[in-house]
Each structure stands twice: as C-alpha cells, then as structure tokens.
Length: 344
Image (tube, rainbow, N blue to C red; front, side, top):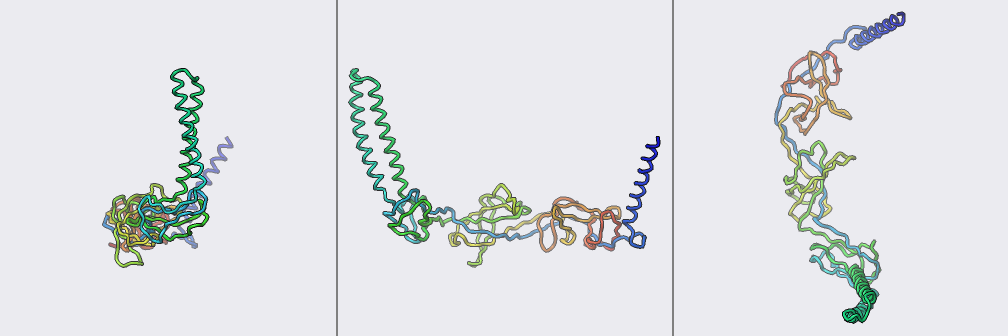
C-alpha cells in the first residue's frame, strides 16, 4: 500500500515538472510568455514551373580499341599509318611465327603418314586381317595429329593483328622490328562516324531523361549546338555521387572523342511551387513551416526542379495549405505565429 502511494507521488511530481517545462519554453528570461512570431505567409497553389538543367559530359567514339598483341615476339610486319582509315579485317601487324610454321609442317607430314596407315588398317579390318585394337590406335593417332594442327593454327592466328572494325587509326607507337608483348600498346582504332556522349544527372532530376529523348549539346571548342538522342540510362545510381549515368548518340563526327561538352536538359512540370527561401534544407530531408491553428508545424517535403521563380514541391504539402515564407528562421515547432500579411 505504501509503495503504491509513493509511486503515485512520483508520477504526480513528474507531470508537474513536464507541465512547468512546457510553460517555460514559451517564456523569456523575465518569465513572461513569449509573443507570437510575426510572419508572412502564402497559400500554396499549383502552377507551372520549367527549368533548364546543365550537366557536364564527355565525348566518346562509338567503338574504340587499343591494339595490343596476344603473344610476345618480334614485329615482322607493321602497317599502321597515322590517322588512316582501315576496313574491318585489315592486317595491321604480324609477329614472327617461323617456329610455329615449322611445327605446323611437321604435324602435317605426320598426319599424312598416319592417315595412310589408318587407311591400310581399315582395309585389313574388313577382311579380318588385323584386330580392332590396332585399327583404333591408328585412328587415334590421326585424330591427335589433327588436333595438334588446330592448336598450332590458333597460335599462328594470334600472331596476326587485324582491325576488328572499320575505323580510324590513331598514332603509331612502335616500329617494325620491335619486340612486343601483350602489354605493349601498338596504336588505337576508333570508329568516329558515330559518337556517343556520357553524362551524369543528379538523382533528383532522373525523371528528366528517358531513352529516345533529344538533348542539346554545346562545346566551347565549336560554335553552335548539337542535338543528341538518349540511348540508354544506367539502371543503378552511383552510391558515391547519387548520380545517374546517361549515354546519348550524336550523328555528327565533328566532335573529337575525349572532348568536354555541356548537356542541357529542359523540363516543364505542373505542381505546387514555393519560394526558395521558404524551404529549410537539412542533411536528411527538406522542410517547410505550415501554419495550422495559429501554430508552426514543420513538415518534410520532397523537392523537385528549381528555377529563379521557386522550387517544385512534389510531396509533403497540398494546394490550399498556409506556408510561412518570411520569418522562417525565427519559428519553432508548435510556437504561436502571428500572420502579418498574405503574399501573392
């Protein structure tokens, strides 16, 4: 019984302390109630908002490959004219394959002898002049030589460097007679009749780009603008930058691969638009202050595109809400507000 009375007294004391604390929050140093914060407000309404987003991009060739040998050896043939156009399949370089060619001839001679032996044994087998095991051994020897020839031909093929596609050669980096290895860069080949542009778009503007969309491209190296068509969008957002990677194609070979360009995305939306100074930025979210029953109510919102006229609010408030636009920094959650005027 005494324990219940004691616990009841503690609960009553705690309620009194909370009540006193709540009253002190709205009082100044003199102990008097703080006056309401004077603010200007606006009535949220739906309107049109448009913006042009500028992002950085890089020009890339449609296809690009570094020409490197698959095997080590000395270059016996080299045909990489600087900046020349070459067709797909053109032989650009050859590596010394004399030892492989000699091994190939050796295997071909042995194959010819093994085929003759297999042919004779097959005739004897038909008249029971030889047992099946002898014939099988001869046939295995034929197949073995054929497999060795295939291996040597594959190794010889690796000594030849061909153009994998039709394109423009870069600058030759080695000379004929040089000893090269798979790590040696001989030159480059690029397809420049069609080029592509890679650029990154902030996650919040991800809805502004779609495959098939046309975007405007400008560069400081040339006057005028170019139009590119969005080909694909990386499905995963970069976790470090929170950007989407986008690739666009442009059928204009005047831009050099590696060039820096500016990409412009245009957007027009119809949504609730508020002044930029009415939005309180935060590390986790953005907030606005609404007036409800004469008090400040902090509300999380999702912002969209921005321009000089304001900020698009996609979620968090609705048309008809009363929004604080002046005196935002002096408000406190739940504090009383006094509306000075309603701005248009």
